[in-house]
Length: 226
Image (cartoon, rainbow, N blue to C red; front, side):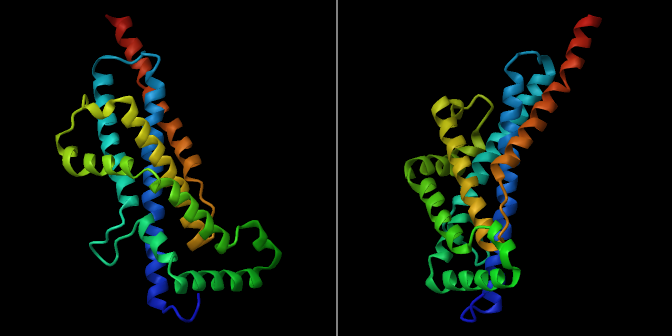
């Protein structure tokens, strides 16, 4: 990184980017498992105490989704080490930081040679990050509703809470996917790793479906014995 940035500044940015990676991976897994369970329940073959337990799990997953989406979008820092996509987008808007990241990438590419062409340049990834983040914040009213849900209503929510309304859930899914797309560019900017969180979420959906499917034979056996 550019000499204008200290070792401490470099380490701080990398640590924040790593924290965003972990948070995005957790969000991807929660989102995937939630949808995997939903899809597997559509055929209605699970009932009784099993489905009641799954409903509780779904409610908890819904809470986690809101918390994790909001955390990755939070721009306000209560502590110097608070990390989010918003914080890192603000950081790369600083010319010194941006120049340092690009200079470090150019040195890396010079040392690696032609193999470096397999990865987008940091300059390109910064541009893509700005675009992905703009897509997240282009609907501030949606983010405002999610923050309100997290801050004012989360502690009072039950399985039957009105957040289950289709329009609100669609907003949550849409925002979550946009946030994961932005997180992918964060990973490219700071670590040159193309981590596809949406693909990771799809893999988690398979696991969610398997969880529900594992209960079906037990339900069928129970009917057979009765």
